[in-house]
Image 1 (tube, rainbow, N blue to C red):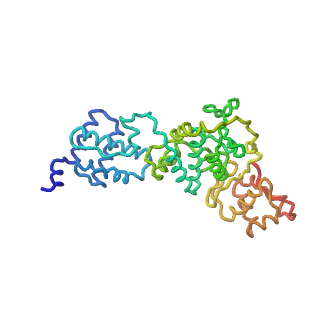
Image 2 (cartoon, helix red, strand yellow):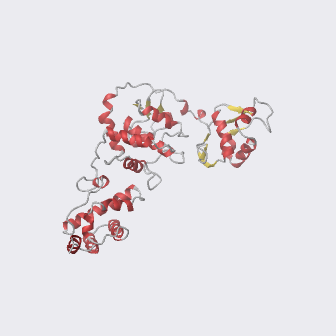
Image 3 (cartoon, one colour):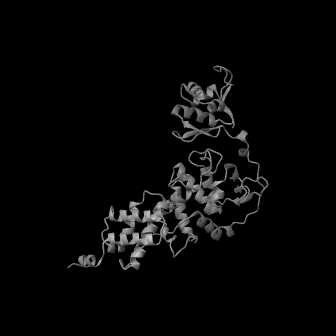
Length: 385
C-alpha cells in the first residue's frame, strides 16, 4: 500500500466533517448567517476545490486555492469566508479529524481568539509606507489618484479618515503648506468651533497639488459623481476607501494588515516629532466664495458634467471642446474670434442646442446680446455658481 493510500485510509470523508459541524452549530444555537456561511464554505470545498477527505485540509496550498475562488467578492465577504474556514479547520483539529492547521493570511488573524475584535493592527514600517505610496502613485486613473492622495494625507499629515473625507478644496492651502480642519474632530458644521491647522510636508505637497486640480468639485476627496464627499462605506462592494486600501496593500506585496487607523499611528510615531510647526492665520480663500466658482465642472471626455451642483449626461466631443474652451478662459470669456480660433466650425450651434437641452445649462452659459453677435468685444462665458 502506498503512502497516499495509507493516509487516505486513516482519514475520514469531508462529508462527515460537514455533518458534524452542522450538528455542532445547531447545538450552539448559532445564527442563520453563520450556518449559511459554513455551508457555503463546504460547497466550495466539495465543489470547485474537489476536497473529498479531511486530511486534504492540512495542505498549505488549500488556502491560496480557496482565496482564488473568492477573489471576486468584496473584502468583508472574503474575510468572513476565510474566518469560517479557519473555525472549521480548528474544530476538525479538536475532534482529531486533522493533525495540523494550514497558515492563514493576516486578514483572518485580526478576527480570531488570538487577536480579539478591537485589537489594533500593527503600525506599518516606513518601508511598507514607501512601497504602498509607490504602488498607488503608479495608477494614473482618477480613482487611483484619489486613493493615492487620501492615503498620503492620512499617513503623512496624520489626519483621520473621517476628517480627511470631510475636507473641501478651500481647506487645502498649498501656498501656505497647511490643511485647515474646520471645527476640529466632531464639530464640522459649527462656525464658532476652532479651526485646526495641519502641516503639509514636502513629500505630501506635490501629491496634493497633482490631485486637487483633478477633483473638479468643491470636495477634496469626492465620490464618483463629484457631487459630495467619498463615503466611508462607498457605494457597496469594494467602493469604500478601506477595501481599496487593503486591496492596494496586497497588490503592493505588503503582508501586514493595513488600515487607515494604522496609517495615522504611523505618522504619530514617525513624523510628528520631526515637524516643528507654528500655527499661522488662515487666509481668506477665494474658493470659499460662490462667485469664484464656475457653474460648470467637466472632467475627461466621456465623463458626466456637473452643472450648478447637479450631475448631467456625458458631453459629446464637440460639446466638450466648446465648454472646455470657455472654462479655460474663466472667469473671463471668449470673443467670437477667440471661439472660432479654439473650436471647430459649428461650435455656436452646438452651444445653442446644449442650452436648449436643460435649464441649468441655459443659465450656466452666457451668450452676448440677442441673436448672433457681430462684435468681437462681446464675450461668451461660463457664469459663476
